[in-house]
Image (cartoon, rainbow, N blue to C red):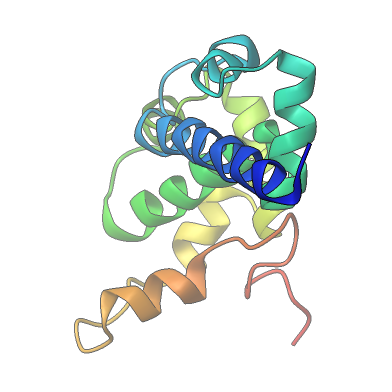
Length: 147
């Protein structure tokens, strides 16, 4: 295989992985399985997991969890919805699993996060507020870092 055709194949593969990630971003609250996402990327489930990790630096499962936690954080800051309803709204069926994962990612349980983190003021551009609050990796959000 020539360098040019190998490059073209990598670009095609990356576009397909981006499509699968877009499905995860759009449908994060719905049940998603690796087989369905792999079909979007036109590859086997095992190849999809490996390729996704290489391309994006985390497994599809970790990415989906982070996306759901990110949305839950926003809902906790901006609504008065009960934690149980937020849990279901972002795609978890178990409050215990949601709370455990939230604590792992953010460093505090959802109720403590809600009471400790005020909604960002309207004077801060939304993109900056979202970047500050985005969980970049498990356990490394600004609120989980030592002071």
